[in-house]
Image (cartoon, rainbow, N blue to C red; front, side, top):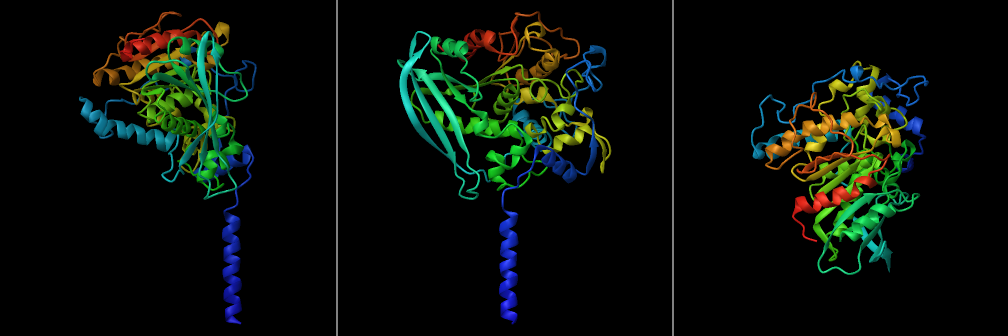
Length: 447
């Protein structure tokens, strides 16, 4: 009898354990609520509305835009000591900033992320503009043996000149599969003797909260909900770009020392995160990235921290980020001024490598929602780190509160940190030619 009970108990425990490992099917609202419960948050401030007639319209009054005007000092340690040498930056300060961003803003990449096996699915010859090219469609299969219910196949396309005397620089671009390829920038890259690599972010991680128990985040968690410091979609897309770079480093047509990363809007955020955390990327073109990208979190102008903490966008961030929008919680209210880091430090993590911050103008569709001036302030504030590391920055002071933003179509392109606001819309295409010329010149590349 006892033996039978022991067997039944063991069988029941096995069934409960197996059931617990089945992937969770949450809606976005359920997943967001689960994270708030984990954090002990009862309510948060609502998202801002881009419509002035909306229930909670965004602020566009510059006099009200800086409720927390003092930024964290990128060159001061948590114990108060000032950083004065490059060695101190690399050994002491940079790791502090990386830790704060990983824990509180973008989330941590788990140590147990499975390996990726790359496979060239097809190859063809064709033309981009008037230049012959070689196009390869590539799949990166993530080992899902630990959770076979979740499959992740990273989709990537590599296009390089068909005729090249030596390996070429390549710009990796986040580009969703349901949009047509960026013909103009692609032609400019090929004409300049570059290649380009298109990565589909949705093949890495879905762009909505209900997808967090699937994709690479779900695979690593075996289909279970995230913990508060787990990675969000931006960090996951950045991880996928790094794995794509693994493949590019094995390709003899690619100059692996000159691979850049590019993206616009939410993918501009991801490109900046990728550049900050992956030191093998040599350069970045960050297009209209807005809040969560190059815009200061402490700014209240257009898109707000609250948007990134609510159901529409929280999946981009670590769960912990929601704390800073809390109204009622076990730890009290939160606000942007409590963040231990801000976006100028994300840009600073890219130093001394090449970073080009790009925006358009509201009149053509790059809405004030993107807060161009907030990105300018962050870029200015990041400049002192580039200087500390011995490379030219913007050529302006680090006075982010008073340094005037340059006129439209006036580029600051003489340093490793660059800025240009073009006269187009929500795209970085008008800045592509300036980026290519700048990157070639700053890296010493001869065409």
